[in-house]
Length: 361
Image (spheres, rainbow, N blue to C red):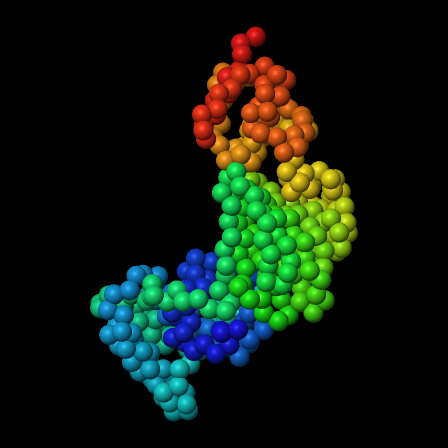
């Protein structure tokens, strides 16, 4: 992996590193914390780079080369002053600004706190004074471990084969991100939305899907994950084999057998295991719409995603409406015709706009 050979300047210029420092989220936290555990020798370099990024912020490029030269001169001068305080040992060597404790996410300055705070302040003033812009828009070069993104809009489903031969069946309004070339010993995929995975068996290289704070790991198996951004839950359903589901936020883990699932409540962080209906889990993959006493507004949202349309409800009754039905590879018109007969409404389809008009009783 390219990060093993990075120095301070490389980290400061790296998009993924700056994202972790300035806009952390569960996916990026998981990546860097895991990487630091595997590469403890980079702890000091990471700490120095992190402090610089925090000082100058995430800004577009202006006067980059001229300012960067002055910045590194300032850092070198500051660290020489620190070494003199320590008795002249290692003069001129870049020293860590603080220690990064991965598990506790705490940063302690210890004996050098006052000195380092002054360094950080000096760097910040320097950046403000001469307009340092650290973000390099031309740095978006294709690397071997860059993430490839595959996405579907509403109304579209797709299949794709991963670099290891595993298959992903991607639902509508969903996306996956993964390395162009998996590294030896691990296969990681990031999912938003819903997908079914058929994992090619490789005992030496676990297959992990990261969705929010959940990491689902398998060796050779098949499972479904639903993790739409605007829905309150993330669910994992195991079809065959075995998977380990890790909650990265609480460090809790659950081992699943076929026919078992896990549901994470996003708001509360509560995670529970349950029995699943395998056939029902696979309906979407097999191009089948299935409702069973489903709240009508929820069914409408599902149809909007499935067919890529916007549905407007008119004269909606006050009482709670539910619907049931199984539609195998049916058109939107046929689905609405059946539901309209059962729930007493008419509809109009105008390209991607649909109006539903409930009849007065």
